[in-house]
Image (cartoon, rainbow over all chains, first blue to last red; front, side, top):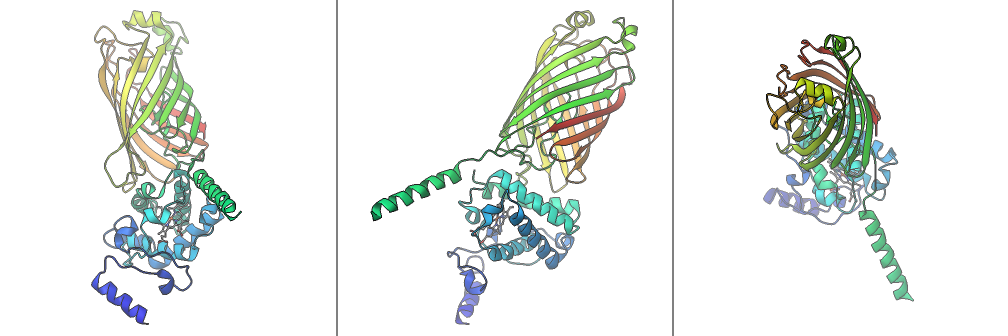
Length: 166
Length: 290
Ligand code: HEM
């Protein structure tokens, strides 16, 4: 309770950069080392208006897309090893936040920045594209229009430079 | 004893860290259609234009390659090309194409004999020098590549009679390609320095010009799905021989069945070729690779 109050106070005084220990606020998740939070961590800015948020069927749609994206990635022998020993609970939550933030659904992204989050995973461009293909499959299943899918992918594409290390 | 174990664990950790950093060779990592299709000169591109994209489905993690065969049926001629190309680390492209221009019955009217066929071999190399057409969505900078095509035509004697100065030549080009995901568009522009007559089938240089002239190739395609793109292309050509050589253009649809097979169908307008005008027809190209 006191922690939550201090956290809220910190948020109200310095909304752009706070230090959070997410395991305290998200009980199902493992603790991570402290890091600076802020919208810049999302790796791109949000769309304007609510066209994209609507095209993705809002919170429920984004939730389904992210869950299927993670499920497909875990089921894909070409990349599944990369995810083992990482906290999938946290990944699902932060991905939903990030997608919601980018699609202008009004969420704050509370995760780490893209470079820090993927440091030492040893990702290759091939991994990146496999993930994109799973995302495309998930967006197809959610019946998101192809043009809207591409607009979203345009936001994610430059993250190849932030996540791929070799 | 403890130190030894620690040193061994340390060495193992270092080695595994090194192994994790080493690049694994992995083919086939590109997204559908992002390797382009095979142009009539063998280079990765559209149909009649060479693009900045490196052919094949390998990313910078591997090596890709493909075979292609293309047929263009025109009212008075038949144009066939086939060849092979490799893309190395999404950086370098090497290609070979063999072109056959069959004059069919028209050959007799031209005094060459029915079925007289012009051939040309084209060996190409391309180097990506700047940008990434797909990932750099946060900037307007396109993917830029420089390339050359070494061409050798086989009908030197006839080429000489038509006024052609050489039966071999080299084209140089700079191409810029960009996928505009926000618009679901693919754009390409190429400037080619060339002396080629009808891409080289009718030799190089002629009585009107025997010097390199810059020519332009432009393509625009709309992505309709992950597998399907439709578009238009335009290619300017010099008229060195004074035979009213026309610019070329086409409208096309490229369909990726999967990452192994793609089909390109087009309606192409090659204008006047060797005094026979209105050379418009159906273009069909098959590409198979990885
Ligand atoms: C546009 C592409 C990508 C986006 C937007 C993205 C987004 C994210 C986000 C939001 C997180 C959580 C950050 C946090 O925990 O604070 C994360 C972590 C992670 N991502 Fe990605 N990611 C991308 C590409 C990839 C790729 C290609 C892979 C592997 C195939 C991958 C594997 C992982 C893993 C294993 C983690 C957990 C890291 C950890 O627990 O320390 N990501 N990613």
